[in-house]
Length: 179
Image 1 (cartoon, rainbow, N blue to C red):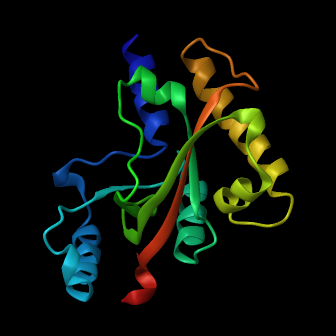
Image 2 (image 1 turned 90 degrees about the vertical axis):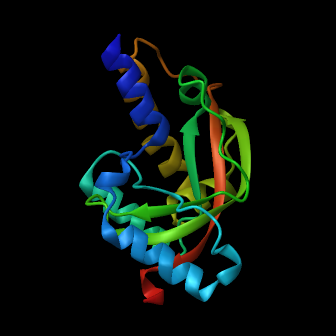
């Protein structure tokens, strides 16, 4: 059971959580640079930092898509939030996206959060999440079905076409390109 909870928590975040002592200095530096250039955010706390996915290749690829502004959305299963008794993402929240090694790559701000059945995801949303215009919905469905299936099966569950997906749209508001 302990492994199921750990897997669900990791899947919920689709990333590696970091304790304050594990946070790379680049995260602090990026936030400091951002708040110096945008003093209206100086009083805000350091946002959470994390990377996408669960492996180096995908984490680094997705971070680059965020830096370039091509990736503008992220998806997670509603069931993960429910199992972890966690709140859904908040509009306006900021996050620092890192590469797999924890080096800051970009700051994003959540613009919209929807809960949509898997089989109702739109082509427009898939393009924002995948960072591509080429067969985006087909690629989104394949990649997310595979990932969701893997994580659900580890907890003894199976994916369905009607499973709820938490769809976050975001804007990249700062990146390593600013430095």
